[in-house]
Image (tube, one colour):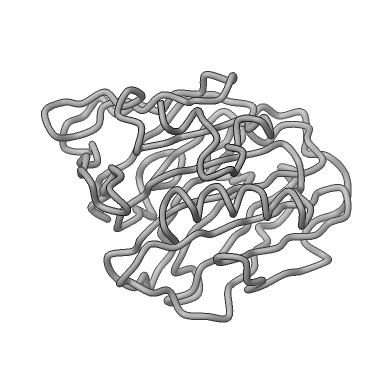
Length: 251
């Protein structure tokens, strides 16, 4: 498959060991119910597949949308892909999330690209979203169950005419949070949470396109690819992943 080779001399992210790799452009990982997606398989070694059994809530599968690549399209009202258990944000000193996405309308309330929770679906561990601050990208969550939700919001408005690349870096060890669009730092805080690793509570819920409980904050637009790593990526590592994603998706 194209995604498993070196693309344009750029090493693909599998060599950086993602804990989650969702690639909607790879049709071999997508199970269709007609023209909608009932399952997408994780291309990392973790095997964290996401599913949706209800046809009404399945995002549509769109062919050759960006740079000739397929994407998942979410309707902003019911579409989501979820899984009931994972360790995506459990006992790690850092977490880095990359997303290729295109909004179909400017969000004026929180709409989630990807969300990870603990056993209590209200206690979101890590979240990449838009609209929590109107028409701005954002990232946030909490390190421990007892922590209050913390977040940052981008300075630039969300565009709706083209695909873009977002990156959220959760540095739990140093209590930092950084949000990038393309390679531009849009927001950061050095007092995100108390320092340390996340709690022992397993992240029991995860969702693409909504909250993990699948009831609120529905994403509206297209998602091409998602990558999650169990570390806070430094500048060199971010650049390697950015080069791969921007080359592949013509960002």
